[in-house]
Image 1: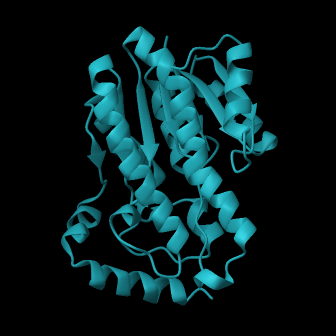
Image 2: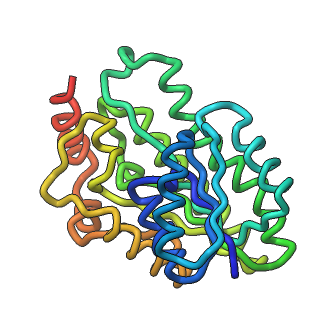
Length: 250
């Protein structure tokens, strides 16, 4: 059985993906900054699926955390066949009002840790000429985001980085794919303090779509017809809509 590593695997899209991978006979490596949540998620999944589940408590919003996680996994002699960089969050507010340290932690989690994990696990995949990476971006990657500027920029980074690494990895038989979900009914929006639009999707819907596209080795995919069609709107109009929605939160 192959192993899939999922960061932020205890809730939302990450947990939904964990269930789908387990249902398809993948062993799980779940990572979260909250050990209690890891235990609960692991117990639930273990009661449903006859797979091996390893859990690692690691706060990936800290510098060098990705390297520490990699070292711990290697020490356990666990191979990672598929890497899912799912952990992330967003901050809402005027750029000058968001605390710099909070922004830095978000950038580490959303950008630096996924890059580090890709760099660390790709050589093993290249050696086997087999494996895959699923990076979670956002529809926010396709436009600037007033009053959530750093978050949208971080997701644009993930998208650009993933497409470049996909080009490099192709000759080794390794797939690198990017999921760009729109509004999803998860704790992410609760943490951000945002109201969910009527077009929001469930985490299960997003995860099922993402798993199918990953298995087909699609490059970039946006779940939901409305989310997809909205990308055709002019950037200025999308920015105005984002600004209006986010500014209502502070």
